[in-house]
Image (cartoon, rainbow, N blue to C red; front, top):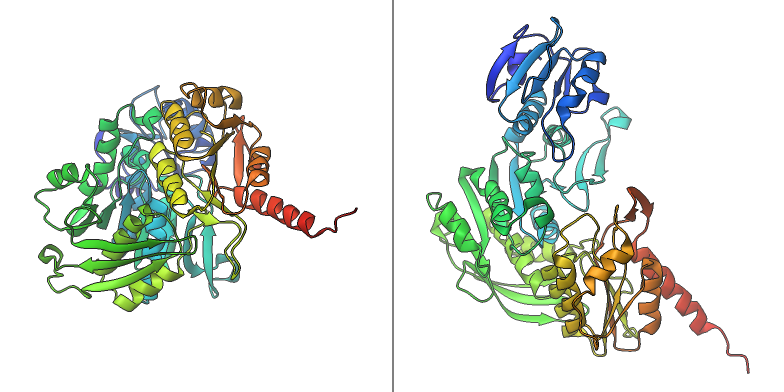
Length: 522
């Protein structure tokens, strides 16, 4: 590819050297540079990519795309100065792969909580309609494509672990090309606030944009809730003129989004309390399922003046009233793509989301003595939602196991401590992903403002905390293990160790079962 084609759409302020050399690849990691490559760099949060320019040139870079001049480049190296290196990275990645997103219908889902559940419920509905889909998000990036190891002849389910909810631009566009080449039309993407703020999604145009909610999280990165919201709004700025915004009518933030996209007009709302295009009623919750009725009214803004259904009875395996919102958002996407009532019912009923109110000991015909639930809740609002949901189905006590991640927003730690001790009968406070921080210091901040009579205990070792909670459970109790959900690791001092809450809890439950079946020696 010629350099001018690689730079298409990028704001350029200066070019030195050969203005249009042949480029053999483009990367932003100097260690991946090969002869003939272009190297894109920018000033990061902790590292200045410009410091790796010399290394990139030594590895064979013939073009440097940067935000500033750092030194005189060799005569055979082209220098390109741009106003925003992050945007340049995203646009060059798209150009290099032939702008595959233009062949796809993108659904972006943003919000503090509910992105993953909404994405998977949406995927279930669209698949039930017979549409080909891909899901990119926190749990992983999955789609059906040709397996490259079988000479491209064997269709296979591709599952790529997600290091980030919103992938790096080069990884993202490589996947989008693979998805488009496989004939897939719909891509359902979780769009994180950091991914939006860091312009990883710059250049993409969304066919549908979904907003779930906005509560405190990621203030270690954004600094203020205003900045956090501004990042979320970027998704709606990338909505196509014919696109549809699907918004939570019950969220106070929605009014701001509506004002922000007032000239757009293509808005579909959903909710439980306020008037909305999609509204849930007759909600029934048990430890086995969540059932509700969705009432739809016409919405001329998105050409659904005659909805595909007036009412639909829905059942999902995700529990808690907050998951009604996630299901409604998914139904909204289904309505936008004219999915039938039968497809919506089937998609909702068959979808299981890893680590989202996931019961480790599933109910049988005979009720279990107690229930053990694993959930990804790692924010104050998320923890409050999952504990409120568990309280609603607990016949006995509610036991909470949770911690807070290290190197993240410290302001939410005492808030989560207060929420757990107020809603749960017993709180077992433990380590989450401490990263570079001391687990003991994180725990001390969680309990810093708790009253002396609060029912909690601190067990820093997470495995032992889970064991204690399960061993302490009695018939009718519900144990909620919150914070990590689907994650299969624990990050300590910069290293990831194998750890899955679901596996740990399951093994402890199996040990209990074996012990209960052993004969009593008298």
